[in-house]
Amino acid sequence: MKLPQRIAAALWITLALATASANADEAPMDPGKREDIKKLLEVTGIHEQLAYMKDSLLNSYSQMIAFAYPKVPQEFWKEFDGLIGEREMKELEDRIVPVYDKNMDRETIKKLIEMFETPFWVEWRNKMPRISQEAGLIGSQWGQEISQSAAFKSKMETLVQKYELEKLNPRPESKSQPNPEK
Image (tube, rainbow, N blue to C red; front, side, top):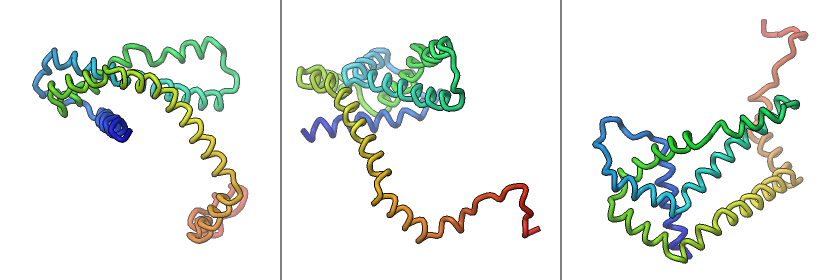
């Protein structure tokens, strides 16, 4: 099972490089290779992962909005859900494709497509979103349990005291109290 993890990790590392935009002065991409890269994004499940990233981003913002504005009409949320649509997702894909173009030759891309279209990989790709979701929930629950445990809080307090964080970061004085340093 280590090989699938390594390949998936390599693909994700490549995806992480997508934050850098392609240079405008680069040679135009071969249209056939562009289509092969788009096919690779499809068969590897990257499109689903990008949709998950979009949903996570919108969910984070919706939580901040709900906290800042307790009363929000339902119509707002309907429009909010459409803030990142097909056009924005296409723009993201258009930024990712040149990264693959720059880092992989067409033959490698074709071999990856062939590999990811096998029944084994199709099954893996179909199961990974659910596995990731369940594992993420378990990780979140674990994080809450750890951070709320008495043992963790005690260790944190010891660390704060050891490095005198309270002295390094005094609380701001209220305006009603005179400032003795003046």
